[in-house]
Length: 111
Image (cartoon, rainbow, N blue to C red; front, side, top):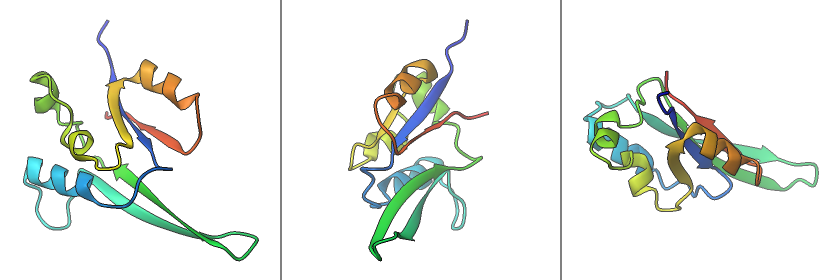
């Protein structure tokens, strides 16, 4: 059975530095306006009139988890360069077990 890989993003710790975006664009030579991963800023005001800002790296349909890098035993470029260390790459089953430990995480699997 073929192992299915994914990307786990813990957006509680994402600092919004955009290095994942830059690394992906450079790895794939994407032109302006195209991303394999795009960092979204989410600003919310809660019931105490406090503002919270979350950053959510969002893999797009152009993301293939750097399949050429994976074949060579390397991490996807976004994971390798993530300064906050909030991205993990691995088998989907293992990443799903990581999600059981805490909230504010998303799991991405390409088509």
